[in-house]
Image (cartoon, rainbow, N blue to C red):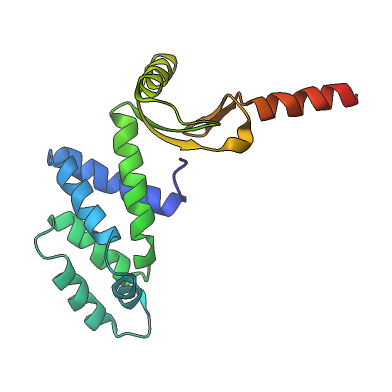
Length: 175
């Protein structure tokens, strides 16, 4: 998954730098996840310019009790700049940066039929060898593929489905 926007990425990079310096990356990830999981109405209130700033800051302070100081500071900054709506994208960018640093790649594998556990494990193993990364895969079934698979690892898509092969063959025959 590509990181969403330069603003969320910059905030996430700053949080990761601080978390790394404090040797607290998992704690920061958990804290950001908690914030991204706040009730949507609470997030709207924290980001609503019609609500007085002092009230929003008090609410943000109450919502972040017990979280690391820099995370609390980030929330206060986002509230002040009317950018609280970015917290979910910041969290996603933070997670992706951590995974990149740890050599983890997410893959989405879509096949025409359900794969058994052994086939899934073998595919993940081959993807890991091919990419040099630890693969965390999710699997889906799409009978329209007819056969084969469509595999997306990060921004790279490999479509080796029978449907894609037939489409290419059709294009070649049309010329």
